[in-house]
Length: 415
Image 1 (cartoon, rainbow, N blue to C red):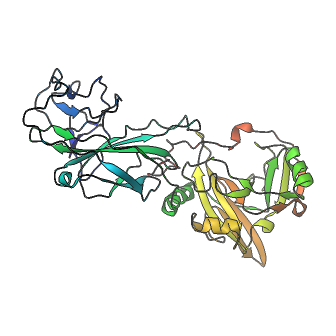
Image 2 (cartoon, rainbow, N blue to C red):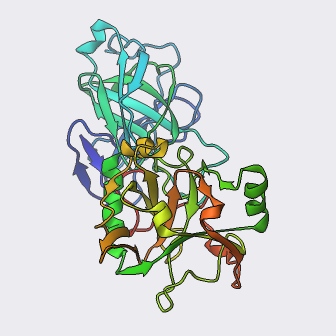
Image 3 (tube, rainbow, N blue to C red):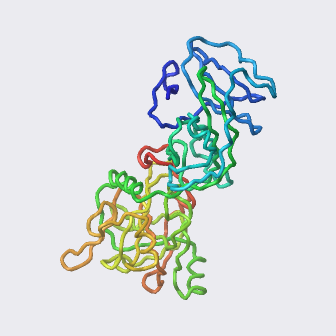
C-alpha cells in the first residue's frame, strides 16, 4: 500500500500489508468521485468519497498520480450504470468486535460467498464517542477513517495514535474492489457496533514503572504515613464510622488507562518528607488537619506492595501511585492480576527492610508518592492534629488529568 508521508508532503511512503492508514477528511455535498490536487505538489491524491450515510466525512485511498488535476470528475448520474461496471458488492453484516485491549481490537463480519474472492480492500469508520467528562486538554485525535488490504477475517486493528484506553468507540465497515482503472467498487456501510477499549495491562504498567524508576532519585528515611484532610472529615469518621477511616473508590486522576481508577477502594496516605528535616511538610493541598500513623502499622512483611501509576499534571512534579494491601485481602486479590508486584525490601519507590533487628522505611526523594491502603484504618492507632502550614490547593491531585504530551511519564500506548 502506498500512502503520503505526512512529514514530507512531496514524498510517498510504503506501508506493510495489512496496514491501517488514517485518511484525510473529504468534504463534499454528494457521494462522488474526486481527484484532489495537493497544494504545492505536482502529484495528486486520487480519492473516493465513501460516506453514503449523509455525512460529509469520506474515506480516501491514496495512489500515485502523474499530473496535477484541477477539477473533479463529473459524477455518474443517479441510477445510471457506468460502462463496464462490475456486479455490486453485498453489504457487510453481523459485525463482531472482541479481544479488546487498551490500544487494539479484533473485528470480523459476514459477507456473501461470491464477494470473498473479489474484495481487495476494507474501509473502517472508527469514531470516538465524546462525553462530558472527556479531558479537554487531551491531544486532538488523528482522523480515524482507516483502509487496509483485504486479509482473512478476523483481523486486528491496532494503533495507539488513534485508540485510547477506557474509551467508547463506534465502528462500521465497508468492503471494496479495486478495479483496473484504479477506482473502487464499494459496498454499502455495515451496521454500527459500539465497544469500549480496556485498561493498561501489566506490561504497560511495567513500562510506566521503568520510566518512574529513572527519575525516582535517592531514598530517604521516614517513619510515619500521614493523611491530610478537613476537620469535619475526621469528625465524621469518629462519629459515624466507628472511629475508622473507611476505604473509598479511587477517582480518575492519573493515567487514563490505570486499572485502579474507579475500581479500587482504599484510603490515601502520603509519606514524603522534607530532605532537611526528615519530617512531613507542614503545607498541605487537602486540609489543615493531619492524621499520622507509624509506618509499620500499614507497611510490614505481611503487606504486599504494588506499582499502580506514574503521571504529572502539566507541571515539573511527577507522581507515583503505589498500593499497600495486606496479603490475602480483597484489595490484594484485585491487584494481583492487574498490577506489577514490588519487592518491599528492594525497589526504587518505597521500602521496608530489617536493619539491626528493626524495620526501617525509605521513600524516593524525587517523586511525590500517593499510597493507597486497601483496608479500613483505626484512628486510635495514630495521632490527629492541626498543621501550621498553608493549604496549597494547586498541588491537589483530585480528579487530575495526566499531561498526554509529557515524554517523561507517557508510554507508546493510549494515554
